[in-house]
Structures are given as C-alpha cells and as structure tokens.
Length: 268
Picture (cartoon, rainbow, N blue to C red):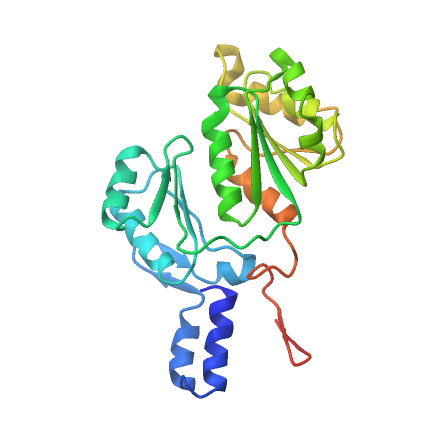
C-alpha cells in the first residue's frame, strides 16, 4: 500500500463511502503479512517511498510468485532482481504478461502505470566494458522503477580514455552518476575527477585471477583519490541505483515521504 492508496482510503471514510470498521481492517494489514516462508513488509512503500523488492536468487519460483502476487495487489510497481531465465519464464507465464524481463540485468518489473518522475535530474549509468553490462543493466532497471530519468554510457573504460572524455557535457548534465567497472576499477576515480556530481562506484567481479572476483576493483574504488566517490558492494547494481534514487529524489514526490499535510496538521 502506497501513500496515494492510504489517502484514498481516508477520503472514502470522510465521504462515508467506506465504513470505519472496513478501513480499520485495511490499516491492520499495513505493517506485515506473514505467508509462512516470508514476512512481507507492506508498510515499506509509505515509510521509504518504494515497496519491498524481491531478491530472486535463492528463492524458488513458487516463493517468488506468491510474494509478487501479495505485493502487486497493493502497489503500482514491483521489482524482482537476480532472476534467471527459467524462473523468469515460470513467473511470466503465470503473471499473464504483466512482467517485463531484462535478461541481461536479470530483473523483472511489474509496472501497470507509468512511473512517476520522482527525480530532480538525470541518473547517468556508466559502464567501463561490455562485460560489466549485467550489473549496469540491473542498476538501470532499478533506477527507472524508482521513478528516475535514466541515461546510459557503455564501454567507455580507461583502456581508451578518449571515449569518456568525449562525453563531458552528458556527465555534467546529470544529477547523480553510477560508474560500474571491474578489473582494477579505475573508472570511478576518472569520472570523479571530471565532475562535481556525486559518483557511486560499483565494482564488478569481472577480471582475471588477480582481480579476486572483484575484490581488487572494490579496494581500488575504496582508495579513490577523487572526491565525491562512494562505493557499494561487488556487483550491487541494485544498491547503487537505490542510493542514487535517494540522492536524486524530490522530497515531496508521491510516496517519498511518510508525512502528509492536511488542513494544517502533520500526521507522522
């Protein structure tokens, strides 16, 4: 349940189209819903501005489907991450075409309505190489589902530094930048030295043996000498996009703030 739906329930009570008792039943379901193997946080959309996200890895297709159905019944958008092709097919066959699958980013999105533009500006996603695209695409889908305008700039790693330098205008026109890179993970430092925009660095597990599954890139990014660079965990495109959305979000965007002003009173 998002803030818009909550407001609608209160309006129906005010106009006596909905009884207080029935409204009370709806409000009782605001917090969590226990379905045995999961406890679904329905209050998260009001509290944080976006409903609970389903992490698909490690869950069975049946578990994902049941959680999805519970969330979709109450929210305009539901995001499922880390979904392989077999799970995606199972879910899409049973969700009757309402899910959009990004096979590269391994994401599924339920969005029957156009996402509200909740950002101050553009979220730019930069990927060093083509091998980094699965993580970059996860970030892209997440940022879009969270209501941001998104552009991408792919395959502009430092092995050909002129490629990133030719896009300075785009970089400086963005509000927040997500930079995805593996191997030595140097690209976020380069971008951080070119712009005053906040840079969220995402190390990937791409690289040969000495990259240690992304640890080399992670340590390189953590030791960046460029100001304004922050780092998320290895391959965490979702986490980077969620952080970028928090930085970019309009404070009074629909569902972004759990407080609502009505007739001069503030309800916490």
